[in-house]
Length: 281
Image (cartoon, rainbow, N blue to C red):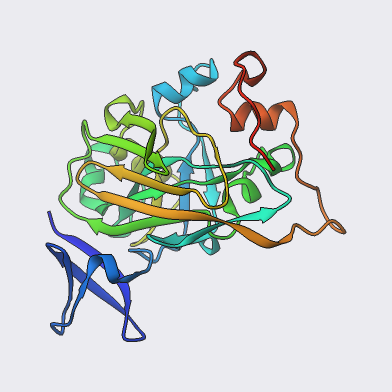
């Protein structure tokens, strides 16, 4: 399966193809994949994410699935890449990982049937749909700051074409420890359905990204933690959490909170009955 990566090479943005442990540019230059300065593998005009899709995640919260998927939007200013730092602002405590598969659109797509969607998909990449749940009380409807704050949408390492999404494992590791262990087989709505659903009213352009949902066990991480998402056949996306140098401004807007809703979402639902301690400051 071909894999394409965008990297910064000798000061320029270059699209490369992976050959073993090397990334090769069209002009023949090579760089070791582990040494490359990675960029997001695509440049989307929009990033759209589904709320709940994995059955293990739904069961974790003890709720039923809606009759059809619901979505939120992550601004492109949140984009990040393999090896990029995930910034947790000072004063925030509930930054959660969410390992996912990202669908990348290959050609303009509007008003198609699910069985036509494959012809509009360029490929797939790994995503980590980080969420800053400290803002959930004020942005629960839009998820704007929860999911759209700077650095919270890493994608990569590369774009893989000709990948069959069916029955593939999806795992998240925190400091080498297995934290999420799911499969695309537990998705209620598959990749083709999601593309067709969004394209009913929203034109999808080449490079646009759809995030397809996360399995159970999304939990908060701390500055210094290394979070890696591995998807069978797509590779391993690695990012380290760092502490933001300044606090969220207190002279404007709603402030970070730690309500029951915030804790329940960040710690997996019914937190008060599970003996789970909130993360340290």
